[in-house]
Amino acid sequence: MNELTTPNYQRGIADVTRDIRAKTGEFLRAAIEIGRLLFEAKAMVEPGGWGKYIEEELPFSQSWANNYMKLYTEFGSDQTSLFGDSQAYMNLRPSQALEIIRLPEGEREEFMQTHDVESMSSRQLKAAIDELKETKADLQAAEADLEEARAQISSFEEAQEEDGKLIEDLKNRVASAEAARK
Image (tube, rainbow, N blue to C red):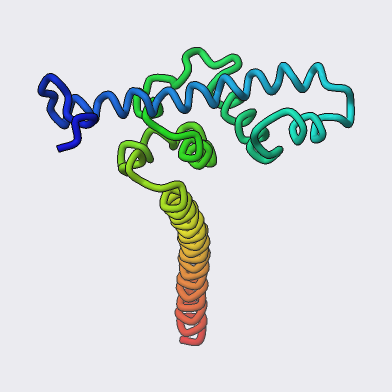
């Protein structure tokens, strides 16, 4: 048996999982703090030197610098609390949080409640969000079609009512003409 992996005390899988999740939450906090620091650094770098600064001084690409800054803008800065009312964000990796912020703010909580976001890869999460957006677009198109159909029905009903009045008027005229003829 490997002595390094055998602890001196007994812990259950739930304990280990809780500790892993707590450490995972630190990833997102760190990414948000990196975003804050990047905003601070950007204010100090001379105009036009931002890309060069990132390339020469930081261990990540400009794309990731932008991502960190997005996370800070979304979850840091003037937010009342780091993650609103939800503790679910605490267990996300930065790449997952970047996918979640593609959703409108009011839809994020519901999405996280209806999907096992923590166990999804960023690619799976992107696919689920894209599918949700496509479904919503289809629903909006269907609602627009429904509204158009209702308008057409209303128009047909009005036309039918006018036709009914016209027919009734014609019947009255025929009756009057027959009465006059007699």
